[in-house]
Length: 175
Ligand code: 5GP
Ligand code: MG
Ligand code: MG
Image 1 (tube, protein in one colour):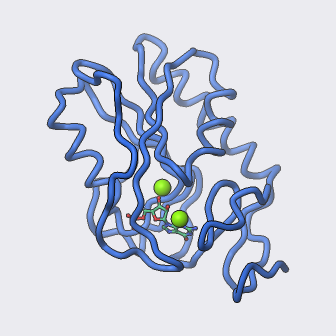
Image 2: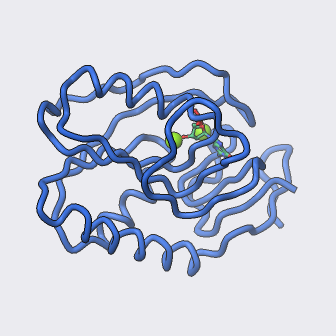
């Protein structure tokens, strides 16, 4: 158990299990993108650790870039997505692989997919470490999912609570 600010969290998925699954996802992506030249777009802040581990598990050598969006305040989605840091790369005619930490309401994902679609990519695929299917309403289902989890707040492995806890190696769940 750990305490962050006013909340207590317990271990939910251990680092070894996360890394095993990330390696499997890397193999799947190698297989599906081997004849393509994908541009990975990692969605900051939450996906920074997942995308770093994922790209180092891949045999193909994709280009990677970052976009920063925010929708969560404390433990809940505000329902509005803010783009905080934009994209400089040209994505016209590119195979895009969006890398997310977690898909909850799907608000962030549908915002990003709609925005990217206006820029004429060849394809858009989505990989997310975590997916809360029970909470999902807004977006299409991600193409690659690390773990399906219940609609409970999690932190660690890049995910935060009020800016804290991103460095934790295991994934924790709110008690
Ligand atoms: P969505 O727009 O799908 O509701 O949520 C997207 C973003 O909210 C995620 O990329 C993530 O940053 C944040 N988020 C959603 N669920 C959780 C959670 O359980 N824990 C943390 N730390 N962030 C979450
Ligand atoms: Mg995210
Ligand atoms: Mg957050």
